[in-house]
Image (cartoon, rainbow, N blue to C red; front, side, top):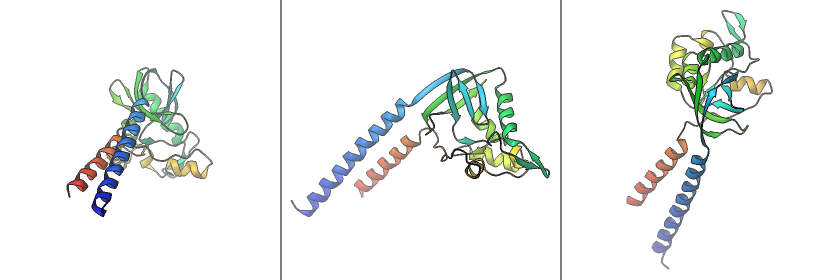
Length: 195
């Protein structure tokens, strides 16, 4: 077999392997989707429980319950304030959550709405949570308006957890990220093949 035929064979085999892996990932991604609704109990500024299922608001990171920040030169229990703010946003409303997978702690990663309000975006937009893989626009607005955490000084929740022995986690990938990555890989492959 000549060199050109071997290169073409190897490229086709590589493409088939990527296609197979992509289909497996997309299939697993679809299996992890869930919809939950009901009265939510707030655990902290980015975690809810609905029907016994723990839900982590995807794309955001709120201060931990014990976390203390500073506002106007005074200590401020920002973790407790974040929880209280999320409770106020929910009120007596029923939360509807669309989960797209789970984190390594078994919590569903979800976007949750109450009366049409996106709780994830509202927490970041009000300054009671930071962007953690999504909601960068809301965070910039909260910073500019010095809302919530941005009215004083604070350690990023992830940094605070690391220095206080809490659970560490990586920023969340927004919903559909796997499909977007696979689509870009496919686009790259088509460009490569056409060149």
